[in-house]
Structures are given as C-alpha cells and as structure tokens.
Length: 201
Length: 201
DNA sequence: CTATTTACATACAACCGTGTTTGTATAAAC
DNA sequence: GTTTATACAAACACGGTTGTATGTAAATAG
Image (cartoon, rainbow over all chains, first blue to last red; front, side, top):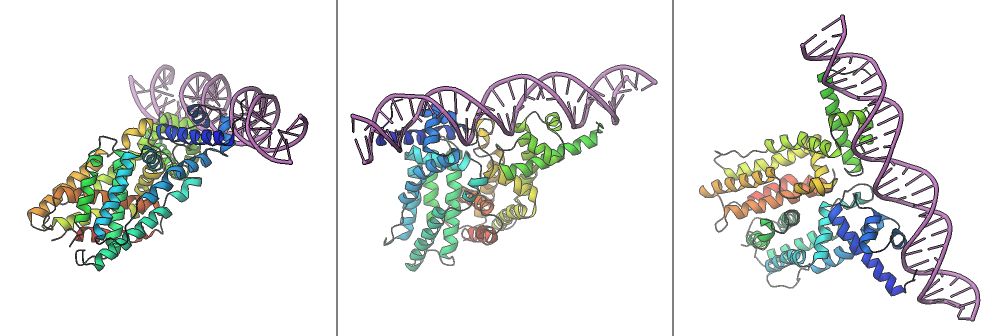
C-alpha cells in the first residue's frame, strides 16, 4: 500500500483518535471494538495497532487530546479587584466551552457516562490532579475575596470553595446527562450567577 | 439435580443478584460475564438464564433491589417548624445511608462509575424520576422555609433547590469516587452543614 | 542508488461470551 | 399416584474480539 509520510501518518493518527471519540460516545468504551474505530476512521486495525498498543492507550490519547486544553482554558485572574466576579467568569467559561467545543464536550461526556472505572481506569475515578488544582484555585480566589471583605461573614473560603466544587461537579454531570434540551443546560448560566451571588456580602 | 422449592429458588435469585453486584463493582458491568456472576453465586449460567433473560435484566433487577429503598429513605418532614433543619437532616441521611449500607453504596457506585450509558441504559443517563422528586421536595422545603422567613433575602427557593441539588450530586460523586479515605467522605457532614448554613437568614 | 525502515493492510490463531438446547431430578398440581 | 411444570446443570453452536504475524509498497537514510 501507499506508504505515508510522517505528516500523513500523524494525520491518520488524529483521524483514529477522532473516530475513537465518536464511537466511544455512541457505543461506550467497552463495547467499542478496534475494528469499529478503524472502520470509522477509514483504516484497518493494522493502522490502529501501529499507532496505539491497545484500546486503553488509545482511550488515554483521546482523553489527553481534549481534556488537557480544557483545564488550561479555565483560569482565575489573580489580580482581579473583584475575585467573586473572577470566579463567576471562570465557572461560566466551563459551560461555554462545553457548549461551544464539541470535542471537549464529547470527551467529558465519554469520561462521565461512557466508560467504566475498573483496572487501568480505576485511578481516574477519584479527584484528578486537574480537579485538585481547580479546587485549590477556587480556594485561593475565595481567600482573596475574603481579604477584600466581599464574602458573607461567618463562612470560610475553604468551605465556600468545596461547596462550589461540588456544585460544579453536579452541574457538569446534569448538564451533560440531560442532553441538549435539558433545563439544566438552559439555565446553567443563571444557576452559576445565583450560586456566586449567594456568597456575596 | 435437586430441584428447589419456590422459597429456595427465590433465595438463589437473590444470591445471583448479590453476586452480580459484587462482580459488577469489581469488573464493571461490561466486562462482567454471566459465567463470572454464576460462579460468584455458586451456580451455573443455567440458573442465571432461568431467573433473568440476560445481563441487562439482571442489572436492572440489582438496581431496583437497592435504589428503590434508597429514595424512600430520604424524606423531608413537611410540617417541620424549621424546614432548613429538615433539609439538612435529609441531606445528612443520604450520606449516612451511603456510609452504613454497603448494598446501597455499592449499587450507587456501580451506576456512577461501573457502567456505560448506551443502548438500554441511555435513558438512565439523565435525571431519574427519583431525582426529580428529590428536587421537587427540595423546592417545596425551601418554599416553606421562605414562608417562615428563614432564608436570606433576595434568593428564590427554586434557585436554592437547584443549587443544593447540584451540590448533592457533586458530593455523592466525589464521596464515592475518593474511596474510604477520601477527605470529601470525611468532611461530608461538615460540608452539608456549611451548605445549609449559607442559606439561613 | 541501494538498503532499510516506515506505515500500514491482510491473514491467522486463539479465546471468550452469548444464547439456546437438551437433560434431569424433584416439587407441586391434579 | 401420575403427570406436569419447575429449577436448574451440562453441552452445543456461533460470532465477535484480541493480539500477532506476515506481506508490501513507498518514504527515508546512507
């Protein structure tokens, strides 16, 4: 067969990853055979086994391909004069990305609903390092808000941060789980604003 | 082979369901063969196919076996003089059940982390009817709290209810996902109290 | 320009897992 | 006391999936 150049090979690699995402989303990771992925990518299993050792490695590659840029896109502005507004913006950005970027949304949906956390995926069940950083950033932002006297009295920044962390986790889950017509998806922005407003002094 | 009486047959049926829960939890639903379940239950696949049409039906039976009593156990006292305390009690009850009743905890862990929502499970991805009832009950409880002037001014009961709903969803996920030594599991009670306290006028 | 490596496609062997079918001893029905 | 239905066990047939091994044409190295 026509052998490809390095650039063309990299393109087929990305095609395989894209195909894997589509099939994972539709069939679930476990019920997806490499044959299905290969067919969806327009190649044979030979190509898949050339680029990836097995389905597990392909899954992790697909995950990195989309979630790594995701965590980088949600940032907290450190020298904001209103840290609460910064938190609100960061939270809204999460759901904007989910709404606007199919690749990220589909990957998160796969990780949340289309795979089983056993064996090699078991370590991913708990709080990922990216999520821990997010929680840490939240705590720092709330601490800055407290320093400026923006928070309700009687609450600690850490408690507010974990509460927001749980809120975000739950909202992402229901945002994705409900489908495009979900009321949670429709009202997400309003819910984020209400959540942050509840913290303001 | 020694044929069983109706009562003995029902016992083997429950044994199969228990075995399915154990194997599902360890291997994930997709990677669990009926042979594994049968072996764990001390029977053969013949017994499994006698009581259930296939793995899917067994999965739903296992799910009903544990989640139906779960939703009934979390109740909101309608004529409480402090509806916010009633909400707090109900939320705490959720995590008490998760902590104290392995069957319920394992089943929730399976549906949260050990199965893929495709095909026949796809409808379960969204908000279940039990969860909708929970959200409705939350809204009513917050409405009663508002009527007694217990809530912070400027927030609607519906907004508080959805916020609490997301909080609970996120906390359950992280409570389960972190394992027995999770800080979220350790601090769940405190987080619930802080969450409710934030709402009080 | 030759040799080697690359980037796959194709073919092969082995193993599960599933659903069904058949067998069978006993409980229950009459 | 037969008969029948029950509650399984055991055996069978089948397709699907995996990993690997082999083939191969072109790109790249030398």
